[in-house]
Length: 323
Image (cartoon, rainbow, N blue to C red; front, top):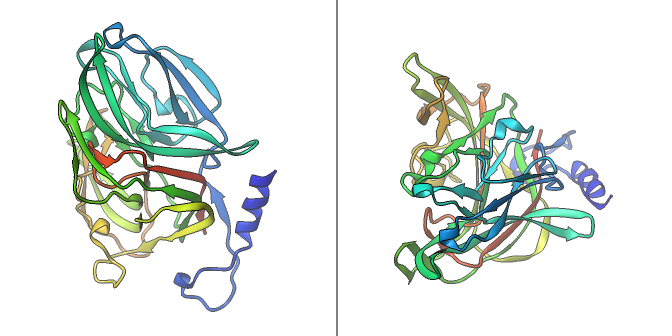
C-alpha cells in the first residue's frame, strides 16, 4: 500500500526546472517491468567441492520463483528485462557464484534492491587462491552464463531491450552509503589504491541496425547520466535524471561519461546469427528520431572491473520512466 501511495504521489509532482517549461503540464510515470523490486527469482547453486561445496543463493529481479541447480539464467525464459552482476561462473569446470545484488526489505512488505561492492574470495581446499573485487549492478539485458573467464567483461553481457518510446526522464528512489577506501583485487593480488569510487546510472536510447554480416551499428538518440559522489543516508523518493536528445556534445552539462565512445569499451548484443558482437556507435542521432532500443545500467561503482570501494551499498526502488 505504501509503495502504491508513493507512486501516486510522484505522478502529481510538478515538472523539474530542466524541463524548461513554465506552465504546468500533464505527465505520466511508468514503472519499468519489475521496477518496483517486489518480485525476485532465487537460484540455488552448489559450488564445486574443490571450493568447499557451499550452497549459495543468487538473486535476479524477476518473477517470484526458485530455480535449483547450476543452469544458465536465460532472460528470455521469463518476462523480466533485468540482468545483473550476480552470476554463475564455471572456469575449467569449477562451479562458483558471485552475489552482489540482493533483495532487501525497505519497510515491512515493501522490498528494494541493494547493490553492493564486495570482495569475493575463492578458496581451494581451504587455502586462499583468488580474490577479486565485484561491483553490484543491474541493467536491462542479460549475462551470458556460465562465465568462463575474466577477459573482456563487457563481451559477456547482452545489453539493451527493444524500445521505441521517448521518455523525458528516468525516475527512481534511492539511498547510498559510499565506502572510503578503493581496493584493486584482480586475482592473486589485492591492494589498497588512491582514488574515489562513485555510484552511477547510465541510460542510452539508441537506433540500432545490423548488416548482412551480422555487424551491429547504432546512433545515440537519447542520453541520461548521473554520478553519485556523496553518501545519502535517507531515501530520496522520485529522484529524476533528465534524458537529453540528439547531439549534446557541445552542451554545458556534457561530461566525458556521456561520450559516444564509452571509457570501458563498447557494449555488446546478440545479433541475428546468435553471436555476441559489439554495438558500434557511429554517431549522434537526430533529436526527433525514434529509438529502437533502451540501455540502462545502475551500478554501485564506476571504476570498472576488479576495482571498487568495498562495502559501498546503493539501494534502489521504483525504477520508472517519465513522459
